[in-house]
Image 1 (cartoon, protein in one colour):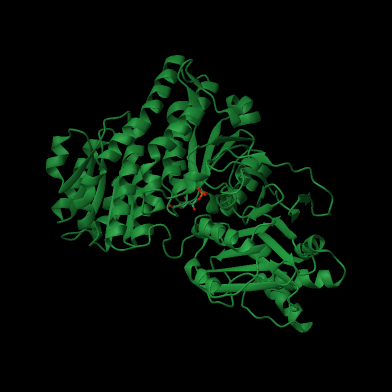
Image 2 (image 1 turned 90 degrees about the vertical axis):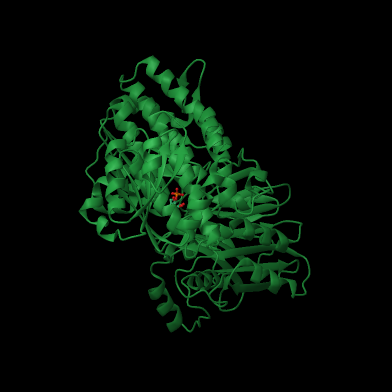
Length: 615
Ligand code: F6R
C-alpha cells in the first residue's frame, strides 16, 4: 500500500524522489522519507510523519550536495504508528544499508527477537527494519548488495516489495518483488534508471519500463538493469513501451484528481470502447484474450471476483454474463473466495476485476483459481499489472492513470469491458446472433456521448448535495442492475465524505433497514425506467410514509417519480444495460460535491490507500 521510488543517474536524485513521492502520495500518506547518496557514497536520511509537504519543508532546511542516487517512500502504516522514527527509509545497525519496503514481514517478531538476542538494537517499531539489518549482515558476510537482498529475502515470510541502497556500492539500487504485496516497476532511461512501486512515478521520465515478477531481483545502476531470479540466475527481462500519456497524470484545470477523473470519463470510456470493439465490421475484438479466447466455448460457469469498487463492477458483470452469455454466474468478494474452498473447476471461468492489477486478495484468489485449473480472464487498467500475468487473458480498460483514491473512471471503464466480455462469451457459446452483437456494439459506442451530456448537467446536483452534506447516515437503494450501483454510490459517499452510508437491494429494505427511517432520514433511490420501476415506486412511498426524504435518480421525463420524490435528478434514456453506468457517474458527482461541502480531502481520504497490497 506504500509508495516506493528510487533513482540512479547523473541528475540530482532528491527533486526526482520528491516528484515521485508526490505522484505516489495516493498510495499512502501518513509519513514520507528519502535517503540519498552523495557521489562519494555517504548517505543522508530525512523522514517525517505527516504529508509529503512536511518532508519537503525538512529538506528545504537541509544543506546538501547534489545526490547521485536515492530512494523514497510514502507510508501507510502497518507496524508502528505514523511517527518520524517509524517512517521509511530504515537502516541497518551500522548505517551501511538503507531500505524502503511495501508489504508485511509476517515473521518479523521472530526475526526481531533473533536479531535482538544477537546484539542488534532497533530504532523503530517497524517490521521493515528487520530487512535492513538482515541485508546489512549479509553484506558484512561478503555478499554484494543484490545478493545480500536475495539472502535476506530467504528469511522473510509474507509478500513484499523492497528497494535497498548501500554505502558500499554507490549508485546501485537493489530491488525485489516477493509475492503479491505490490509491484516493482523499473523505468529505463538514457544513462539513468528509475525504480517505483507504480507507473505513476516512472512515466514522467520514461515510458520504457519492465515489471519484476514474483521472486525476481534487480540490480539497477545508471547504465544497466540486471534482473535475476531467487537463485541469482539471470532473467531475460526486457523493457517495453507503455503507451500512457504522462500528462494524463496531472490535475490540469481541476482542483482534485477525483473531479478530473469523473470529468474525463467520456474520453476514458471512448478509448476503452475503441479498444474493445469495431463498428464496421461489427466485431468484439478483445485482442489481449490470448489463449483464453479459444476456450470460451467450453465455459459452463463464471465467477467474477474483485474488491471494493471493482467488486461492484463484478456484480454488474454477473448480470451481463447471465443475460448475454446465458451462463450461470456469480460475483464474489476476493478476500472471502480465497479462503472459502470454492467449488470450481476447469469449466469455470474466473473473471477478476482490478484497476491496479495488484490487489493482494484478488491475486491470492486468482492463485486459488489457478490451482483448481480454472480459465482466468482479468479486467485491468494497468499494463503489465500482476493480474495480467496470472490470468490466461486480459481485457484492458484504457482509462489512463487513476490517481484519486476513490475509483471513478476505472469503475465505468470496467463496466463497458465486462459488457464486451459477456457479449464475447455469448458469441462463443453461440447464444448471440450477429444482429444482437451489432446492437450491443451500438449500445456501447453511444455511451461516451451520453456520459458527456450527463456531466454537462451535473451542476444541478448542488441543492441535493447541500442537503445531504448535513446528514449523518443515509441509504442508497436500487433493484436489479441498480443494486450494485446503490452499493457503489454508498461506498463513494462514505469514503470521501465520511458520512455513514449503506447500499441495499431495495427489496431488502423491509427486512431490517427500514427501522432506520425516521423523519428527515435521507435515502438516494435509483428509480430509472428499467430498474424495476414500479417496485421502486412502492419503496419510495414506504420511505416517505415514515418521514424519510428521497432523492431519486430517474429517467428523463419521468414526471410521476419526479413529483413523488422530494428531489430528483434525470438520467438520459439509454439502453437498460447502460442505465447503471449513468447512475454511477451521477453518484460519483454527488459524493464529490458532498465531500467538498464538508471540507474533506477527497483525493486522500483518511486511512485509505489506492492499492491494497497487504491483508
Ligand atoms: C474505492 C476503491 C477501492 C478499490 C479496491 C480494489 O473507491 O477504489 O474499493 O476498488 O481497493 O482495487 P483494484 O481495482 O485496484 O483491485
